[in-house]
Image (cartoon, rainbow over all chains, first blue to last red; front, side, top):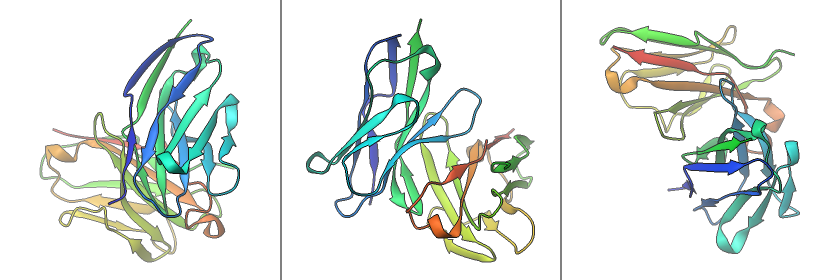
Amino acid sequence: AQSVSQHNHHVILSEAASLELGCNYSYGGTVNLFWYVQYPGQHLQLLLKYFSGDPLVKGIKGFEAEFIKSKFSFNLRKPSVQWSDTAEYFCASGYNKLIFGAGTRLAVHP
Amino acid sequence: NAGVMQNPRHLVRRRGQEARLRCSPMKGHSHVYWYRQLPEEGLKFMVYLQKENIIDESGMPKERFSAEFPKEGPSILRIQQVVRGDSAAYFCASSPAHLAGGLGEQFFGPGTRLTVL
């Protein structure tokens, strides 16, 4: 069965630090990959998505993710985080039916 | 353009009661998805519906749970005879027909937090 795993459940960073959140998916065929963010008290919002083409995907708010097929990975990165990036981040994969990872809670301290 | 609406935002039920969760998709969206999030877990797919049709219900528990998306009105997720283990956040998402099939994003609502006493 398809699965998505996120390596870090909790991450704490200081402002201006670089961020990388790991995501691995199990399906070896054509994949659609997503990163969603949930800010405190808000609904899930799409950060970025990958279907095909350039494996380096740029999203909103300075986030990017790299699709590495050989590693079944789709890690999320941001070179310099801000306090406002404090949120929970979900990696997902799927076609209609999205399979989500367990999420990573990011806390950014000023 | 209003986003995906869910109501109620919080619902408290006693064991054995029924819970009805409503989802109004974004304007122009004809595809609805329901997900459940248990504490400390990611979202788990439950069901995918189009107007008057259940397309994929592979994530729905076999008993007590049902979903519909009528021609008119919101999509309803119904849980009969709730138990404590049903306590969770239930999220609805929608997509327009031409972006369904994984070719676009699903737009999520704020969720309904169900607490079963």
